[in-house]
Amino acid sequence: MAIPQVAAPDRFSKARFIIFKAIALTALTLVLGFAQGWASSRCYKPDHVAGFHMGILHGILMPAALPGLLMGQDLPIYAPNNSGRPYNIGYIFGINTCGTIFFGVAFWRPRRRRS
Image 1 (cartoon, rainbow, N blue to C red):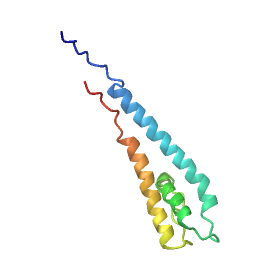
Image 2 (image 1 turned 90 degrees about the vertical axis):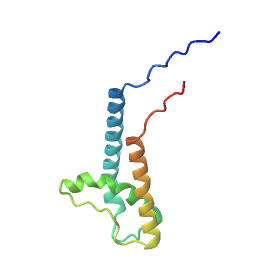
Image 3 (image 1 turned 180 degrees about the vertical axis):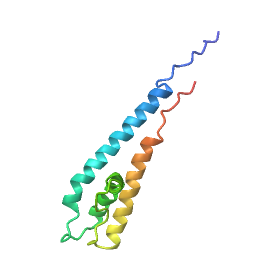
Image 4 (image 1 turned 135 degrees about the vertical axis):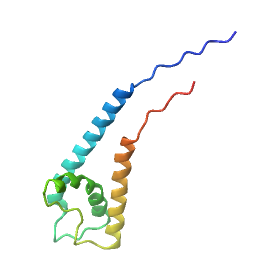
């Protein structure tokens, strides 16, 4: 005797999923924006030579500077006094890490259960 299969209800409706995604992206954007404001005065010092680790931090915070730049603020996004190749590698690594996190949240979909 076969047991009848009952479809599991969807955990999220489409509207709830879109709202959840919008809230998550807004929260991530706000966190990055506040981090950019906090770090710009502390991490972009002209007498300090920025190395690999500062490159990672500057790369992660670079996308968060876009709203401020669009509003007319003059925000630093790259340290002019840097160590060269190690800073650039850290900067690119930071940009890619931030993009992976941001777009990972943007394009994340919950798994569908197999029946």
